[in-house]
Length: 250
Ligand SMILES: C=C(O[C@@H]1C=C(C(=O)O)C=C[C@H]1O)C(=O)O
Image (cartoon, rainbow, N blue to C red; front, side, top):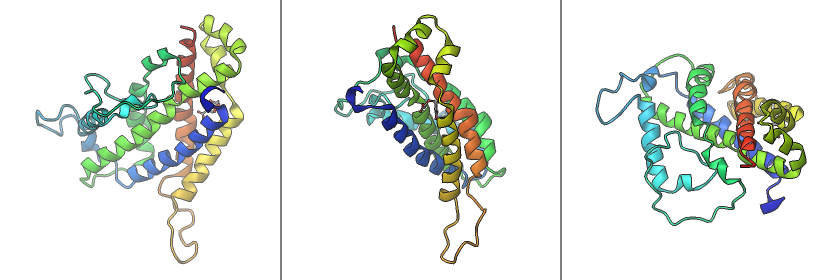
């Protein structure tokens, strides 16, 4: 495969990213739900627009944009409008993707999924006042999820290059269902769901010096992690793949 990128190497990266995602969820789960972080009327100052989390994400992204974060095609901002330009010298990232890929940004869906669905599954109800740290943890989760989900672009490119003759008719017919079928590997998905549950058990256990008196207590529920993947992360990654493929012949 061109540029040394193979389906196998991309899958290995997705496996490594599981570690990042699970640790980020564990870090967020240190805090209770902390609802004022998300309440637009909580911060009453012109410095911040919207909720605290909105401002923390937006302003951090502006800083990271200056530091060159979004020059990497694997990174996608949640607030792409009016981002300041990078001030660092450009790095020559290998071009793997078909250029129209740049127009795909699913972060709006990722934002909604995270705040409306995921968070309540792993953050315990309550309020401990740590809103700034909570927002910072949310940002880390969001960025890890976004990177993983947009990796679908690379996965789709490699799948396309491996068998263009299978994909081209479905792309020309704009047949989303056929594309979804072609790019789906159910056994891989089942493996992902089982592995992330196992990782959540290993990473989220209490490590003590005297044997296993904490068995069965996890910092994030392994079943919930598996469900996050099965119900949201994998479907969104596949949606990115479909969107990418639909533009692949443009
Ligand atoms: C990412 C891939 O494409 C699909 C999505 C998967 C995922 O998001 O984990 C797994 C298998 C495929 O159904 C892949 O084939 O590895």
